[in-house]
Length: 179
Image (cartoon, rainbow, N blue to C red; front, side):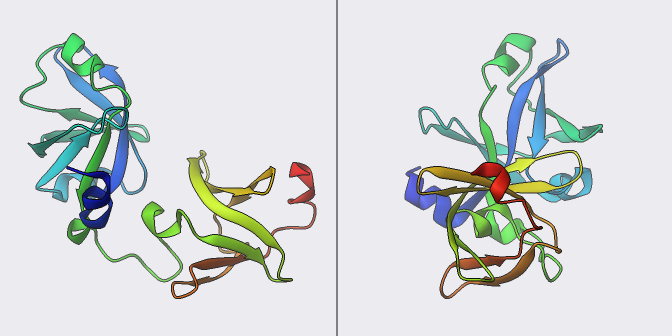
C-alpha cells in the first residue's frame, strides 16, 4: 500500500516497542486509547515504516501491561519473529476510530498543523507528539527552533480545520525555555 493511500484511509494507533516473552507476543505503545479501544478493532495493518511494507492482520488478543499493551498474533509464534516487528506500527481504518469529546484530537488531526500564539506569533508546525506519563506533548518545529508544549486544555485555545492552525496560549516562560 502506498503512503498516500495509507494516510488517507488509515491512521497509526501504536508502535511495536519490543518482543515480550518466548511465545511471540509483541509489546505495543498506544498513541491513544487503551485496552477497550484496541479490542474493538476487527483488523489492522502492521506497517514497517522503514520499508513501507505492510501486512493486514486480524486483531489478536490484546492485554494490558501498565500503560502498554501486549498483543498475540497467530503468525508470530516465537520471540525471534516478534523481535522482527520492533519499530513497526499498527494502523487501523479511520472509520474504526470512535468520536472524541470536544477538545480532544487524534494524533493525525494535529500533525502538520501550523501553531500560532494568541498574540499571532508563528511557532512552526506540529511535527510529532511525545507521550509523557501525565499527558501528550506537542513537538513544534519552527525556523531553527523546536518548541515543546503540553497538550492540555490550559494551553490550547482553538483548532481551525479550515486554516489548519492550532492557536496556543503557553504558560509564561514556556517558549523562552527553548530559545
